[in-house]
Amino acid sequence: MDKNHIGYLIKMITDKVKIKADADLKKHNLTLAQSRVLIYLNIRGGQSTQKEIECHLSVSHPTVVGIISRLEQNGFVHTWLDPNDKRNKIVQITDNAIIIAEEMKNKILELEDTMLLSLTDSQKNQLESYLKIILKNLD
Image (cartoon, rainbow, N blue to C red):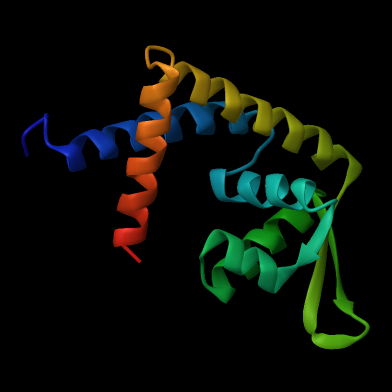
């Protein structure tokens, strides 16, 4: 594939972002998917239903079950059945994980600043607009 092809460039950017994220997460024994759950929970005030996490991450129920299970085993979240609806599981972030989620959010913002460093505000706005259009086209 041509190295100037848009798909190739997007793949290379994604790979580099994942490598940087994995390096930052390794010290906490977390995966990128697990960190996304922690950041989401932190943004949501510390807790959410498992179903809401599935929708936010756009992943299957079994995938979220595995992620949540590993997070709970490692002390990053607590879970319990919703007393009002036993079909729902509530997931709550632990105090220790809140600190990690904030750190990860800050790392994401730093990485985004690095990626966009050479762009003007106008170019950043255009890029955001184009990416939203591309994402919508894929739905």
